[in-house]
Each structure stands twice: as structure tokens, then as C-alpha cells.
View 1 (tube, rainbow, N blue to C red):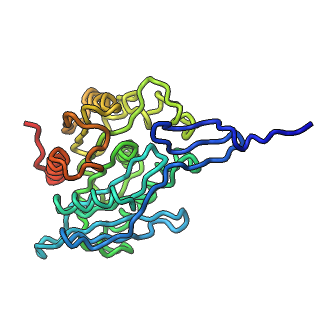
View 2: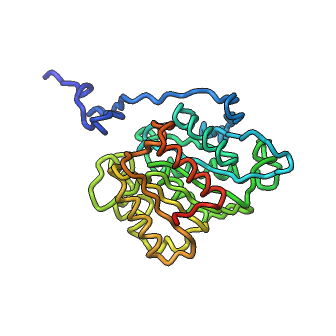
Length: 313
């Protein structure tokens, strides 16, 4: 009897309108979306320098650091921003053109030092690997708290009393979970001042086939890592003093970001949380329409948040 190969039979396709990857019945994964990368640079327009540093040789993880132009040598330490990229946990890179350009602009505007962290992506590396990888790099960053870590830029310039965790889309999810993890797995000497969530991805009660595939060990919409609103009582211990949730009017994830905001408020958390909605825009528009007025305005508002001057009033 002739055996028929399943090698061309598709078992799953994810994001058919903007295909990320497909899975064949024989288990083979074909990545359709190819993440572009660019090298670090010394930006001639802003003076922002960037470089790549290995954060975990064992796991093959690196980070991209961004340092603003130092105009006031007397200002020894500046706020530290730890950024996690989006991409549905499956695509994206801190070394991609969009993230490189955005972080360069933000570092210049806000006068912060930034570390854009890498994590291994699904489906080859299913969740919770992304969470663990991000935490590995955050612990590497925290190893510089006494000024004797392996990276001079962090030793010399990072203010570990003013640390912000930030991300967009799935990266916002990771940033939230890293902040929560700091509650139980303390980063000695590190003070997380704020959490900045840009068009965050969280689950609701609807089935998500992608999450079911890339995070088979989760509890779905009842998993607080995916849906923090499902465990409101845990949010009361969010170990930072300020949170800014940015949503876009036309983003299909908008209501999930709003639900997160409402859940944190309901929890009784003793901090300040604000919700900022950008009218007429879609998911992570600020990465793709960087010169638009709304993207420029949002960059200013994010910069103000990082410099403790943000207010919706």
C-alpha cells in the first residue's frame, strides 16, 4: 500500500491576512514572515549611540543598548528603560529597523538609557520561554546595580532607582509579567518606578487559537499571565508606583488594554494609573508612521511619563 506523505498538508496557518507561519501535518514549521534586522549605529541626527551585547551566551540572547548624547556631564545617572518588542510572541526583534528607529527617537526625546531585550520566539520556543528569556536579560541588567557589571554604559549611566519596564503588544504582556515577577523574585537594588504598556496584548474570554498552539501549558483566559483581569487580587501587589496604558481607537486589542486598566484600578493597587487613547489609529501605529503628528505627540507623552511629568489633566 502506497503511503501518502503529509509534508505538504497544512495543519495550521496563523494570521492568514499577514501570515506569520504555517505548520504542516508532519510537524514542520514554515516561517513566512521574515524579520529584518539592522546593525547598531551612531545616529548622526540625534547623537544617540547603540550597540549589541550578549546577555546570556548559554541561551544565545543579546540586548541592544541605546545611549543618548550626553550634553550635561554633571548629570551622571539617567533613567533606565527596559523595552520588550511585540510580534505575537512569534516574530519581531530588538534589532529590527522599526524598533531601532523608535528606541533611538525615544532615547533622544526622553534622555534615558534604554535596553531592548531579545527573547526566543514561538512556535519553535513555546511560551513561557519568552517570559523566562526576558527575565534572564533583566537579571543581567540588574547585575550592574553596584556599578561593577560587565557593560560600561549601564555601570556609568543607568539610574537603578528610576527603572521603567515597557513594551508594545505581546511585549507589553511580557513587560507586565516581568514587573509582577519582580514582586516575588526581587531585583536587589532595583526600583521599578513605572510600567508603560503600548497597545498591550492580553486575552479575554474569547478562544485564541494562536495562544493555544504556542502556549499549550497555559490555562488560557484564566491564566493571569495572559489575562491579568482574571486574577484582580494579584494586581494589588504590582511593584511600581506608576502605570500608563496606551491604546488606539481602531486597535482590535483596545478593549483588552482598557480591561487591564480597569482591573488594576479595581484591585486597590496603591499607585497612579492612567489610560491614554489615541483617536483614529490602529495597532502599534507609532512604529510604522513615526513622522505622523499623532506619533510625534505620543512620543512626547511617553517621554513626559518617563520624566515624571505626565498628566491627562
